[in-house]
Image (cartoon, rainbow, N blue to C red; front, side):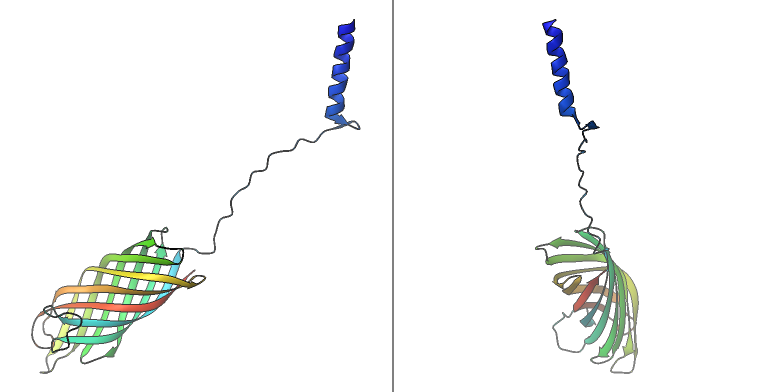
Length: 204
């Protein structure tokens, strides 16, 4: 009989813990915190740059000052997409707006852009792709210059974020190597073309 009384008291004690004023105690559910997704940058970007380009006989280098080379001041248009932190796809179009001597030049390229963030704001990158070059003009003896071909292009560069979504960049791009021409500044030769560009990028 004593055991039954003790059991009854235990049940009553548990009931007083589980109930308050006749109401069932509220069960607290665990909270699941979902990390916020940073959607401030979509991955798409566009840019504008100013380039100093050299188109020359393939026996000369960028810094030679002599017949067989022509430099142009170019505008470079850039558009791309960051697949992730380390790889982007980029397209470029370059148009000469200032001719030092005789050439008009346009070029284009589509690139895979491996990139490495050295710091949060500064990164280095490469450009590996395929593109074309078209040059025209008249040389010193009155012959028409004509070259239009496509091939492998490559480059190296660096960029720095100066403000939210805005970066400046500087790079070197090898546009053509050993391209055949029907006539050039001095004679029918193969030509090289490359450019140094500085510009600004906006990330959407």
